[in-house]
Length: 384
Ligand SMILES: [Zn+2]
Image 1 (cartoon, rainbow, N blue to C red):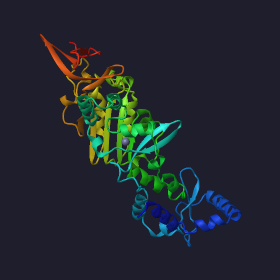
Image 2 (image 1 turned 120 degrees about the horizontal axis):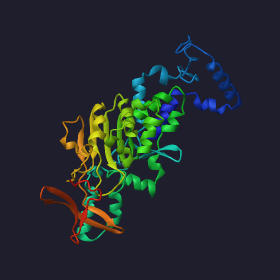
Image 3 (image 1 turned 45 degrees about the vertical axis):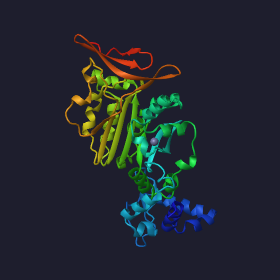
Image 4 (image 1 turned 180 degrees about the vertical axis):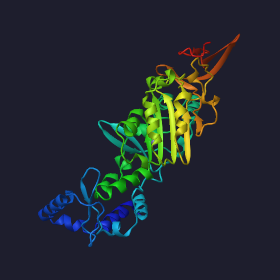
């Protein structure tokens, strides 16, 4: 069944007189004004009258709305059936084309929220896909290594590089189109049910910490507890990790973890952590950062994605790997070690991770394959 048909049927079903009322102009608006004025006067909540038509209630802001009991949609159908109908309305013409049909990237840009469809394919779930493409270009000499290097170093994570490029270059607006706003504007009675359904039946993807913090902590929506599926790809600058290293209590990352803990019925959660440094040596203080994630309640699947486990020895205890810890209540997935990087502008080089032991000291180097040059760790964390 076409989506447009479902939406128009739903509308005509619960408000059959809508079109008729629109035709009568001045009289209608005057009627609506008087009705709204009446509804704003204090009344008993949920007080159904004999005719069951003119019942009004006040929401938390004191603004009245009609219970729409004359509508068969609200009067005859229980909330469970109404939820199933809303779920049908969200079906889109592109759902079959992409790996996750109900996934939306959420951003706070230019002072307002935007949501765009996730256009990743099933193959993009392979965390080594980008570097395997670079392998074939490196072997054959045909292809643009610089373009793939840019994707490899993207802060959107290895899965969503298509979504990022789409935002930057090509963007067919029709792919992003939703029925969200049109459904929310139908009537005040329907509004909360519609928003709850949107939150329950879509996966929310955040690719920047600023948007995630604003959405969950700074200015949270009252509908956040209805979120069921969440995916966070967070590339944090070092100053966001620093409070964990020195043991400071105040941290925006901690605030975000606490806010996630208030979502009572989370079904799937994936958190991908990385550092904004974007260098080949990058490493995060995993142990302390992920410590609070153990308290999160996730019903079905909880995955924590971390940078590769590199042979780097670290002085600071909090920089130790998660491997040394006891069993965690989430699945830990590590991205594959890097084997391509742009050490000099304009040139992408292939390398391996080499260990060099001298006496009791072991050092780790990046060994470039072409000119037998070693690149030492710039952070000197592997020195005893
Ligand atoms: Zn995506």
